[in-house]
Each structure stands twice: as structure tokens, then as C-alpha cells.
Amino acid sequence: QVQLVESGGGLVQPGGSLRLSCAASGNILRSSTMGWYRQAPGKERELLALISGGGDTDYAHSAKGRFVISRDNARNTVYLQLNSLKTEDTAVYYCWNSVPQLWGQGTQVTVSS
Image 1 (cartoon, one colour):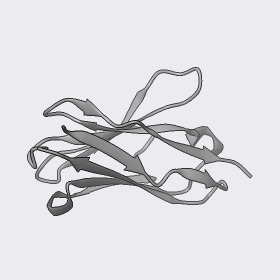
Image 2 (cartoon, one colour):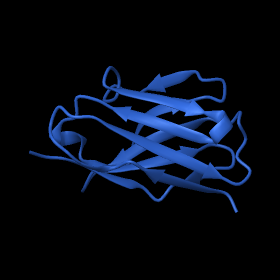
Image 3 (cartoon, helix red, strand yellow):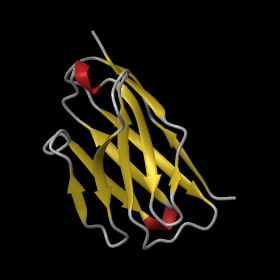
Image 4 (spheres, one colour):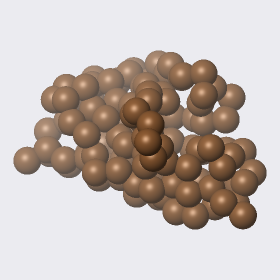
């Protein structure tokens, strides 16, 4: 069974950094576009970044300049580097795969002093 498992969330102070990982198990196409979303309390889930199988990236305005998406196809893993974190970045962060369409269980990121 194909699964996405996120890790790397936690509590960090404003201005700090975290690196989120999303490991895909099972038969995930290496050409599949993957991405990261987040959902803050009381808000809709929002797209942050996408990465194609070939490594082309696209970012939402809220992520551009601070977050970096990357992938290691040999390890079936996609990463999201979070830099210069702000309190408003507090949310559950989700990994997404396009083919087959899958969501991870989410990992909590809390930015607080």
C-alpha cells in the first residue's frame, strides 16, 4: 500500500528554521509531481510549493523566498526547508503526491517564543 509519511515538525522560535521530510513508501512514480500544503486552525488548506519529477519548482506567494522544496528520487523523499519562520506559519503541514493522488497524515509546526 502506498503511503506518505511526514516528519520534522516541532516547536521553533520566530526566525528559526525547520526541515520537513516526506517519505513515500510503495509504488510512487518518480515522475509524479509532489507538493506541500499547510492548514492553520480555522483556515482552509493552502498550497505552498510543488516539485515535478524532473525537479521544476513552483511556489505560492506565502512561501516564495523563505521556503525551499526539493526531492531525492532515489530515496522517494521530498523535503520542505522552512526558513525565517513567523508565528503565522504555525499550521499542520501536509505532503501531497499527484499520481496516485495521496496525502500524508500531516506534521505540526508551531512557531512561538
